[in-house]
Length: 480
Ligand code: SF4
Ligand code: SF4
Image (cartoon, rainbow, N blue to C red; front, side, top):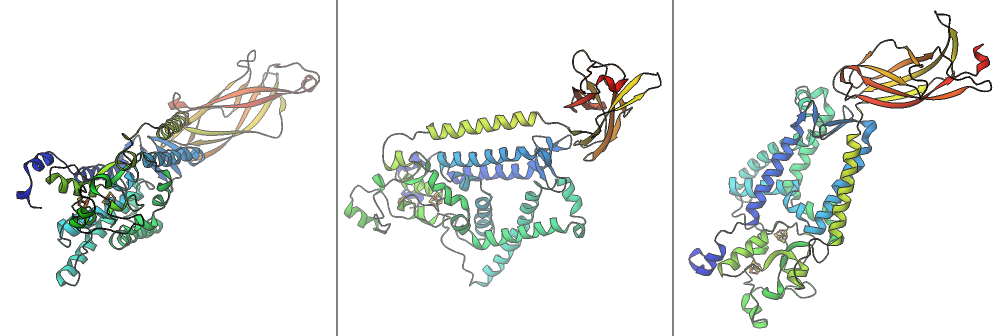
């Protein structure tokens, strides 16, 4: 339909209308910028998110966790999966159409490079017509498209690796590729996959490979919002066996004089997954809403609302009233998400900036006479201390004895703070002693609970851990 044939009502209908496609492009831009920028955001050397395999660290919200602290990972995965499941119940495959890198890459390659940049395809609105590669100039353009995409695939592969190798290290590593063959191999494999996937596999990845398409159908309910053709207004184009009944409007009108579908098939030609939305809900639909745009334009020119809506089956198909967004399932997903996030935040806030294991030596105690002629009881321990921060720190500790014994259990070794380098696990022999009569028991040794408060001397407020242990005091006759 040309511009001139658009009725005044149609012009009014379409004035100020912004296609979902344009909104999607803006969203793709945001997602892409976020994906590229997030790995570079650091505070005091800690990343917003980084799962560093070479340094065996998890950085989350600018806090660094050791591999021993990876108990947080299951919570992160739960948030990811519950979030995706919740979004699917609410908006179908909206993640696929609006955020998935596969879809974004395909839009960049097909719509930007092939169509807009090189003119290999005629129109963004026709995704069914493949480029004519029998023409020599198109063969050259195809090679150019492949080279451009390969370059972009390298950036995408590097960006992915920045979530596992700190970008600052990555830039150093790639200057010596022969010393970092695993990293280089990973990048090359990702690039090869992206070239094969985006140029050759195309949307077949979404339809046949992606496991998400398999599980999403069980998550849908009649309130799930997705692209839906309205057969009540447009007319039934397919029968129950999904066989097409009409290709011409006059045949459709002969059977259903109120049917509004013009059978223009704009909604079909624009579909990246090559389906006809008028057939009903299909697993292949990625909720990109291109068909909604197409029909909005066609019907809008006639001054009518679109026949393909972003709506729910309940509202459009069954006409049982408005879509129910805040339903028990959604509230349940939101509640679980909030609970898991709170648990994650609480566990993250209890993060200890040093790791300390205290092992008491097998020999319970030793009894000596000190320089002042007093009887001294020693207990020996092995401290395994790890500095999980990025810089050197000097560590020491206090011994907290139970009430009534305060200050009576003292440190014999080490006599002063000791330095531990970042990431290093230091083994330190510690001797505690007392030269006072802590307990007077003739029958048995007494096990006294003690608390060790270990800290970095130069960051006493932040780097501090509390551990519990025991001090064994001999029975009275041993001291004679
Ligand atoms: S774009 Fe609209 S009018 Fe055209 S075939 Fe699709 S549903 Fe019918
Ligand atoms: S039917 Fe096709 S064009 Fe319409 S939302 Fe689904 S994938 Fe997109």
